[in-house]
Amino acid sequence: DVVLTQSPLSLPVTLGQPASISCRSSQSLVASDGNIYLNWFQQRPGQSPRRLIYKVSDRDSGVPDRFSGSGSGTDFTLKISRVEAEDVGVYYCMQNTHWPPCTFGQGTKLEIK
Amino acid sequence: EVQLVESGGDLVQPGGSVRLSCAASGFTFSNYWMTWVRQTPGRGQEWVANINEDGGEKHYVDSVKGRFTISRDNTKNSLDLQMNSLRAEDTAVYYCVKGQWADSWGQGTLVTVSS
Image 1 (cartoon, rainbow over the protein chains, first blue to last red):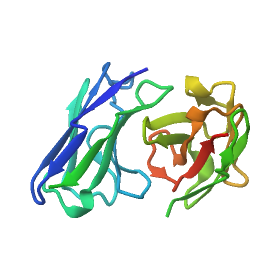
Image 2 (image 1 turned 30 degrees about the horizontal axis):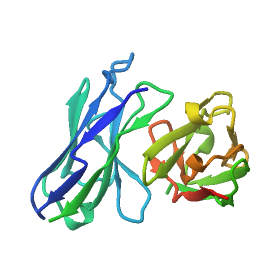
Image 3 (image 1 turned 90 degrees about the horizontal axis):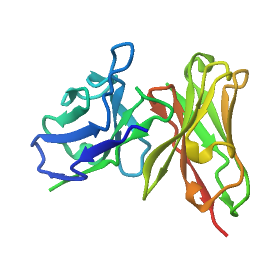
Image 4 (image 1 turned 180 degrees about the horizontal axis):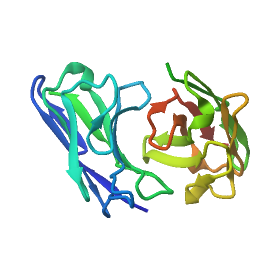
């Protein structure tokens, strides 16, 4: 199974400052069709996960443009350009290039300093 | 608006069974793969099983193979997960998730396996 390793696991950020979360894969996530099926999810306290980004860098409808995804091969990053209070929660990466099973990172808890 | 509403979560004894259901609305259910994902405080998110559009293809994580069965009824826009021979480590919140790429999630239903 593909192992996704996120860092940091805890991310204290000052309001208005940028934030960055890394997701590293144990193997390349390039699929046979050339796509990379790496997604990012946000889970706010007390809520279900919500997908933010799919296929590395495509933002879901309604997701603020302060969220961006990048990366290739085995290294991927979720960036928030200016953190707002509503961004508090846990962020997960997930791959479905090599499945079954799809696999998730451990999660990164973002909090406001 | 996509809505996924899970039900069936319960307190179950080890070795027992429970059936989870998910009622889907707001999209053409029969056009999408559907997935079950579970979450625990200790292990985070874990993909459990998925099923293709017509129910003819199913996949499971190794830890539930032979114990869990995913199924769907496209006439009722519903997704089920039959869970047998339950173990303590199956304790989790179970989410019904739309698609192979997890674009929408339900609110989750809690299964607790304990004596």
